[in-house]
Image (cartoon, rainbow, N blue to C red; front, side, top):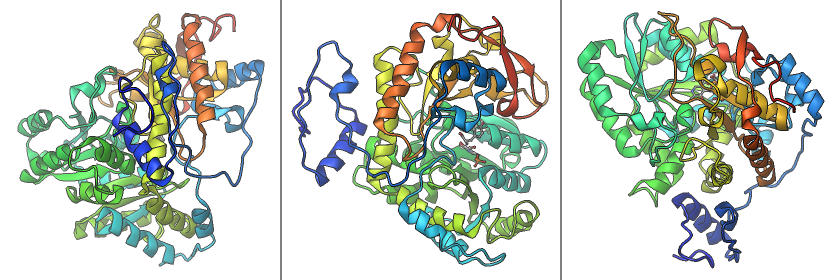
Length: 509
Ligand SMILES: Cc1ncc(COP(=O)(O)O)c(C=O)c1O
Ligand SMILES: N[C@@H](Cc1ccc(O)cc1)C(=O)O
């Protein structure tokens, strides 16, 4: 199908075609695209505009260069410790940073703040049952509240929990309860340059090898993340989910999803996996979860809210034990740390997230930024994922050593100092230390994450971000490595402090 006047030699990705087809179904506008030879390919492609209008605005920080230098120094060169008002464009995370819709804000007014039996809980429960298909839902204050309950109730010391790459808080709770995490993601997930449609897939041989090595009775569940955050927001295919489920269930191992970005995963299945092109996002999400036994959910991402989470399961006994724990750590089983109004906003947000226009625009914003950076030669994890662009800090700062200079931590600080854009380190500092040997984990991926909040920034903001990174790339060898000033014992990336090894973070800036 010809979407608009464009020579056949310019390849359009499946994502671009899906988003444009959908847009043109509604608005039959054919845009004539100018082709510049040797220009940036990205500029020749059309992206569907934002499927929302802006009703309320929030000013952004606008510190000058000297103020930014002072701010990042005060923050110990850790972008987590900057004040929000010190940031121009804040791409630290897509967690809790979503813009809610007018429907969600209206929903807040329907908050039933009863201590027990809030009607908003029943609305949320009904919504999650309808969309995810799980029988029981336990609300929590955010995702790690659900991880805490699941890990405490199912893990015995000496157990193993396989997963398609680690996530910081998830692994923390597994280890805290005595388990060893085992990475069973395909090897390509650790290679920034391996281009695969489903780079978050589980390697079934690795999963089988773990079962053979330790025995199925020491594996309470496999944690299956959809999408895989630290691999770059990479999706898992439905075929792989099905195969994992069959293997796990054959051995009596439960499949517990990390459902945090399941809608983004469903979008990739729709546009990349044969047989799913005509299914709705809702149908795909439902099918995906039908292969599992439950999930943990950080509601601060795909639920389009600012706080909240939940734990789901089909096993009644596990549910009863989870309600026993939720009252100890979160609150009554009908609010679990969330206000009634937040549960209402979450139920509405979850339904909105299933709309193709929304999710298509969301994921295409990531692609837009990725293609701009890629066209300028900035090294990054490819293909671009569902929530963020991960710049390959090891290749960007090839004069720095991963183990002694912390290139990703340094690059995140430098991007801020240079442009006011806040990003996040995702490398050796995030990976932490082995909880038994005390040695540093040394991840293959040493990246900074440019995480795009949902419905918050426009394409013009992303242009600024791309220009900033591209210009910084020209002077990359002026960026100094960092050294520790304070290293916290657990989850050290959140509050650790550093200083530049050469005195100045960006020489002469
Ligand atoms: C994949 C994934 N799992 C779990 C969590 C934990 O969720 P929360 O931040 O809501 O505690 C997060 C974010 O922190 C995440 O990205
Ligand atoms: N889950 C959120 C918040 C978070 C960030 C870093 C972490 O390691 C843990 C949690 C995110 O991925 O952005």
